[in-house]
Amino acid sequence: MIDISPEAQAHFVKLLSQQPDNTRIRVFVINPGTPSAECGVSYCPENAVEDSDELFPYDGFDAVVDAESKAYLDDAAIDYVTDKLGAQLTLKAPNARVKKVDDNAPLVERINYILQSEINPQLANHGGKVEMVELTEEGFAILQFGGGCNGCSMVDVTLKEGIEKQLLEQFPEELKGVRDVTEHQPGEHSYY
Image (cartoon, rainbow, N blue to C red):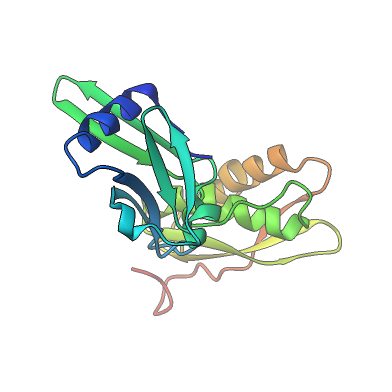
């Protein structure tokens, strides 16, 4: 479930050797499934393991994951990286903000997953976001932009060369294209 690199495992073993016996690590997500989701790792003493927790054995230690966080930690990876500036533990959980959907899920759910997990994090770097308003019977995803995208002069390029291109590559047999219903004229409704 959680891919912990050999370097990170060795680091955890070293840290846990300085803790009381049977201490584990806990991997968790605070506010899972929301834009403010945050992942973390902490010590988990034996008396802090709940009945609903799941234990995952690694080389020399166990990781504990609570039931609520588990679904959001699919494809998570923990690594211990050493570079010129020192060493650091990195945790990447691409599904922490949006629960991964099955390949057989309805197209609407799969498109929303891509929008939330891949496209919106990129748009958020510029203060923007996008959401799907509907999926037409003809196979067009109707999108609405918000935040910094509202009133942006590059929105057409973002829509056609970015979002539409990515969605058509992922769903070539099911999706015909994307359309924007956002009013992009400058005014009180604009982000800026």
